[in-house]
Length: 367
Image 1 (spheres, rainbow, N blue to C red):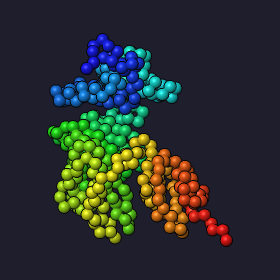
Image 2: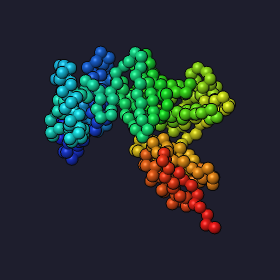
Image 3: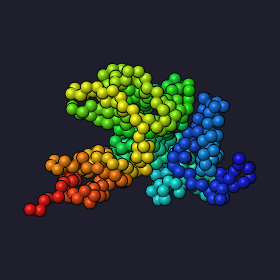
Image 4: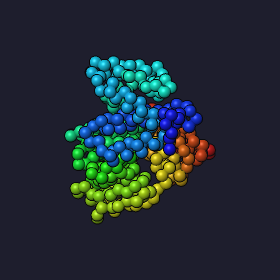
């Protein structure tokens, strides 16, 4: 329990040093302040906010500073907002966002930064979203990641080449994953279920964390959907017909640690029943740290995974049956050159630099 008047109670760490407030924490604090000053404030919301502040001294300091400046920010006009945005951009260029948000010890953040966080809801890749009636689309490019903080406190971490559309209604929160992969950390709200729709199926949650990944298909291979539950409980059920959801005979109640995989039928591939397994979470969530971890994966699978993060694709030579070779290890996402060099050393292969990518091939035999 914090004691008023102590360094820790004023937002400092146990060692008396001012904690570092990350852009993500700053954006979340702005969301909480806005929600608590809105028409839907409740005791339940207040308890959730207190729990959020209890995560760390940095969380408490961020909330304190946003609260201190709320009255000032509320009176800012569009002209001041434009100056705030310009000042924030210049500050980020000179010294970085974290340093600007840090401010002086014990003081409030510079006005331009708080104005930008609370008025626009955007701070260096972290988006604070408001409810939309028609939905809003967000995407990432190849090798890009983005954290989206919703106005209800839920968080979406978008992986490479991901497209989502969000609509926060009064009775239901809906996200459509049109492609790619996303980690959802859902703020609990039993009155408004959180529904993620993808590939003809939907995931129903109230407060939990799970990953949804949609793998594209083609004429010969159908689209694949994978739902992995990190914590809590979710229900996976079909939505309509003719897609992955049609493979479900009924709703599937998932337990933490489980993964459900569904195949969307193509013209040449019949519908397959859902597969349920319990994968290792560390490799599955390694992309959050910018890593790709392989544990005795086939080279074909490893190459496909690495190609998701790079505009320099890796290919395997047609001859030699290289796809069945096994790969284990941790690699930086987007580092195609480092990956192929490591694999070449491991399996005695050669790397060929092509105009549009890299190729792994067997070493020529010496005759």
